[in-house]
Length: 79
Image 1 (cartoon, helix red, strand yellow):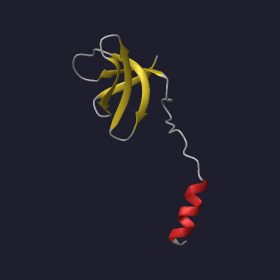
Image 2 (cartoon, helix red, strand yellow; image 1 turned 180 degrees about the vertical axis):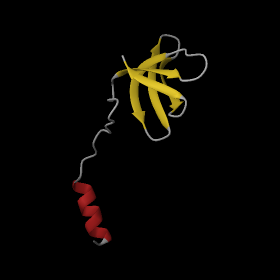
Image 3 (cartoon, one colour; image 1 turned 30 degrees about the vertical axis):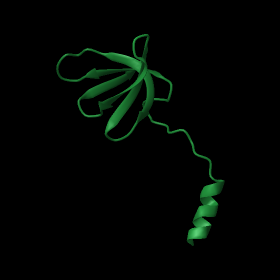
């Protein structure tokens, strides 16, 4: 496939929203440290990859805030 052919194929493709087996974008989720503290943080699932999970927290003081958690050392559940 030439460079031009690759670009032609890419131009016809529509980006898709990422999907994850455990979570869905917009889903209410809770993240908790798996060792100490065990204080949960609840928010809206935004994205995840092999290294991190991102929740959006909403409150009057900070408005919308995306918080990044390491995949290692944290448990995530749907609420």
